[in-house]
Length: 397
Image (cartoon, rainbow, N blue to C red; front, top):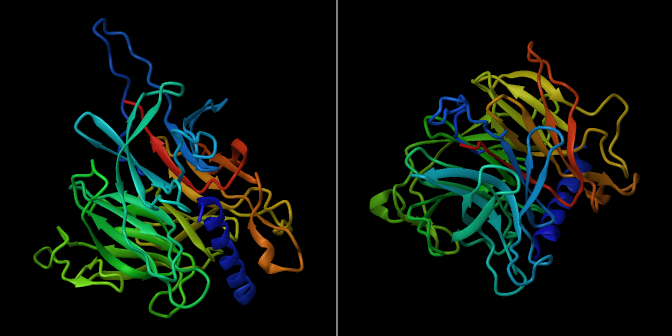
């Protein structure tokens, strides 16, 4: 199923739930380097990557938010285009910079859904290029839409990804998977850590390699909605000797055991957790698209404050929320917060099942903070977007 329609279906499932209950970049900021003459060399502002309409776009993080299309969709460029979506994660190997992104080109035909590995060059808008060098592909249960989303990189270079899983009914079938290098091929070894997550979302890898992942439609007391933490150690390879001796229902390798716990619950308006990033204060920002909320949490997961919520009296209608529906999150070295406004609307005020992303109702938005840490009103960096769902921040060298 094409990425646009698969993800739209996920919001219909979320609508049913409402009716019932109604980064990855590790680059560090640095001072301006000096050239041989001793004069400062200007460093470009961080670059915000976003997938929308199956295109990969990039924006300067400062007004006027200059734009470059880095990869065009297969519909826009049938010969060389690729369908890009989901969370976007940068990592480096030596002097080479790579990007992990959802890539499900020709999913209705011979293409396989998965996560593309791209070599990225360029340090400023207008110079960026991304070349696919590998792809992570796995198996999905029969009841699941093969809908990739989360990504992250462990300290030793292993990659982790999450896919959404079954969203319509029954137990969650979202997956959390660990992948083993090398990644410059289209046949990469993996081990599934978990295959029962309820609508898995964005991933954040912490300094100790703990993995945080959002779950917006948990359906059992053992697996409620919220942010879940998976603690190391994790398998080091795809075999029993590596800690991956079981298999799932599809015959794919599955970890012998996993240490999972609920870290943040859905109180304080966080009804459907979707995005998560680290905050400058050492805690976390977490978004909830269906309620239009972004909350801040302390390092121990305790609620601190609400950063974004719909204004009083602003109800979800055919125009969506005034401040949007925050899905994927990103944060730059200066602490500016970015969110992919996925553009949820309620086409029929009498029908919860009419909730979902509208055509061209998405946006990319930025929140800055003053010297006291108070958030400013969100700025629109780009609008009229089609299903923008994930964000990645590139810090120029």
